[in-house]
Amino acid sequence: MTSLDKLQSADFLPCINQTFRIQLNGSGSVDLELVNVTEADSMRRPERAAPAARQPFSLHFLGPVSSQYLAQHIYRLEHAQLGAFDLFIVPLGPEAGRMRYEAIFA
Image (tube, rainbow, N blue to C red; front, side, top):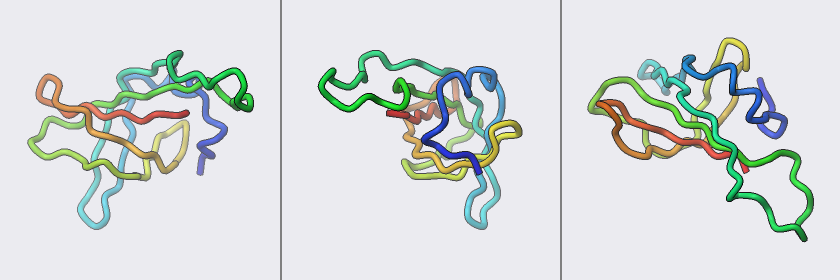
């Protein structure tokens, strides 16, 4: 299992347009496509705060074409290179018939 506190935006950049699988409790799985990795300059901590272990960043995923979507929740994501890790994802709204999701690393 991958440790979230060690992941950097650079770890996800090679994974753009790749699939991350979420195993749902007893009801199959959902595949999300990573479509964007963004460094979050506006999320920088104040200068007087303790130095951050990493620069904050966000991930944007697109879900499958469906009328159903994942609720805001912590899900176990699995990826071929990054392994498995738990991630809090939030639905942002539909985009071209698919639901857009975001995860923020602060």
